[in-house]
Image 1 (spheres, rainbow, N blue to C red):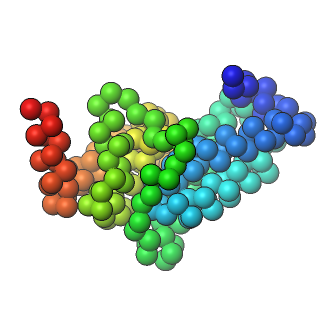
Image 2 (cartoon, one colour):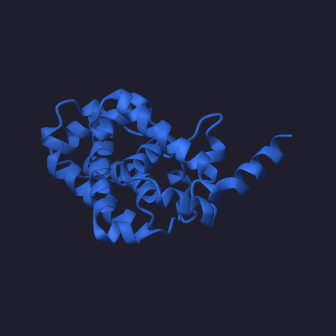
Length: 194
């Protein structure tokens, strides 16, 4: 059974090693899932996740509401992932490798979103189509379909209004739907429904 987040944060603030490890591991897991789906490289995602965990541990005393640990981790991850995507190194990378994730790190999905999450990086066409999206759209889609966040939570993570988050999601999905690279995936999906 997972410890209570508020209790774990409070104990970590007091320096209890098991609580510090719990908070660090939670931050790593959340950050790795989102970063892996966003930045396109398992190695870069691991670097981002480690940086996020360090940021979380360093800033833990400044977290006003310990129950908001996860949204805070998502905000830090979003900033770091966007910074990476906007850097030269992030623009050059196009590979996606979610297959190597542990079972506990695989995308969280709900009904209707499972297909997109499964195919998030399963095909070269999807990897290429995702790499063509603007960084904020790619991150918004990863926060939705990999991290399972709502529009409000995505807005919080991206530091924007809820409507802006909805627009990023809508534009990203529309761009993916219109992408000719994904025509085969759409055709296969439609055949599977019949």
